[in-house]
Image (tube, rainbow, N blue to C red; front, side, top):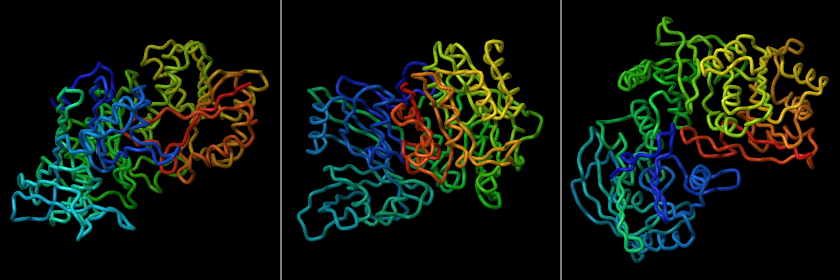
Length: 528
């Protein structure tokens, strides 16, 4: 069976994996590093261990940019056995890759000595071979050529180095002289091995670039990204998720039910050919495209709707996230009303607020507040300076059949509200703070979060119950998580707080990386 044929319980955005007594099998997407680099740069193994709530150990190696079948052991003992199987060539692995180099031979074997140079791994001439790969030509795919590779040994970068040695360097493998491509076109399609006298065989569906005719440019990126998300997760049709995140620097794209919402970060709007690619992809997937041009990468306060390919006849629609419904609007600016980078944080709030008093600052359209109410919080208070967003929040409460009378809505500036709450001696068990990088104040005009954060947190802390928690996140692009945290705790009593990691984002975004992640956040607990 393929991993995509494997069915798990009916839960939206459920990770696809198979579980056995000693190991799990995961269909790894390209762009995910396996190992932890540092405490601030976690790997796929850390993500899976947290999300699946089990200890995991690396049993097999796949390069960051390689996709395909991957095995993780559930114990150190199982990892040792599996490592021996893979290291001693007792497994059978089948890979497919794409190249733009034509070769007359259709089947051959490569044996070289692979060693480490000052710069990287390389084929070392004149030394006894320690690696072997069998190659077999499969077919032409447009202007490219599909090859099958069967490694007989287990050396890092082996297939990539042997392909380059044979002058059929893999597309997207710049490190080994492959032509430019939107991804490393290498996929681990099949894995077979025997463990404890039981034979196992697993297959992974080939990605679009290895199946379809000449996928290049934005056409290829859209198809590959769609495949990548559905390779990782089983999702309901109305689920919302990010389609393109770090895969392209000039475009982000989200799917909200039947809408494809594209953020265009190019300087002078995307080209007509890229727009055609988006519209063609959307039609193929039965989606309605919406394109927003983001001048100055969306920085600053406010901004006009710049561009859309949809008529104004259908301004509002409903999408879901984890079975929670949200009213989204076409005429609301750069965002339709839901920031998907807070998906896991909203879920965490819903699962951790039972019987608690919850304060949602900068509540926007009420995503956190709705989840707190659905999680049976004792009290939910929403605060946002915009009356428009407060009314929108009420609509989201009604959409989810939550009694609005059990919630409190305040169209006020956050600092003004907090000062009033301190005077009234009001406190909460959970305070959510997800501020914009820039804002407007009636007193001070435009303010910057970086300048106001420490004082605002000082006020928030006074409104926090003992053993209460602050869930904080922001998008200060020029700051690392550690730098944001340093500003955040500047006026807090160090001995009275505990810093806890935020729940990891889903893999439609990125692996936890304090140096590069756009969203920076953490949970701060008051100890006394």
